[in-house]
Amino acid sequence: MMKVLVDTNVILNYLTGREDKYLEESIQVMLMCSQKKLEGYVAFHSLSIIWYTAGIMKLPEENKREWLDLVCSILTTASANHDSVVDAVHNVEFRDFEDNLQDCCAVSAGCDYIVTGNVKDYERSSIKAVTPIELVQIVKGR
Image 1 (cartoon, rainbow, N blue to C red):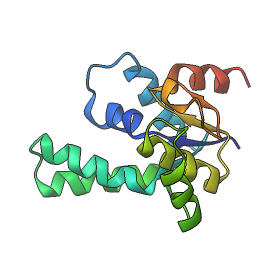
Image 2: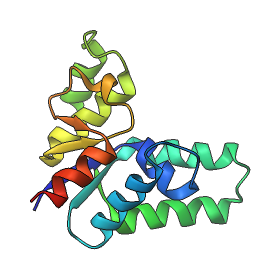
Image 3: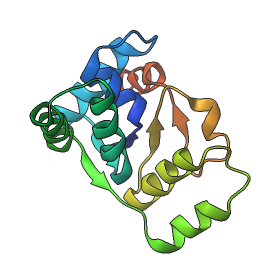
Image 4: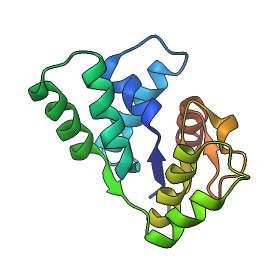
């Protein structure tokens, strides 16, 4: 089964239904993960970003916990070891530290793809980054 790390922006599309060019496909990606058509992962630190975002949206704590519970029921949490995090700290070639951590988690989980709305930030990624639209096309083409 194909393994994918779902970036925070895709998860937030799914949770919030916010205006985004990848909204429909983000929902499809999460549904494919929930239906076990894909083995989906979430980077450990994405959960705190989701919590923080829900706080900005003024969601009550109960709702924030429901969001995290939903995400954890669909996706498996992926982590990174100390050495890979330190490598990410020193990797000046990777433009965005947070995205570098996403890559570290994807490598740790043995993912085939990182699905994200910002592929351009993953030019230095060890794991190929694809948009939700591209991932849906890949899965349908199998």
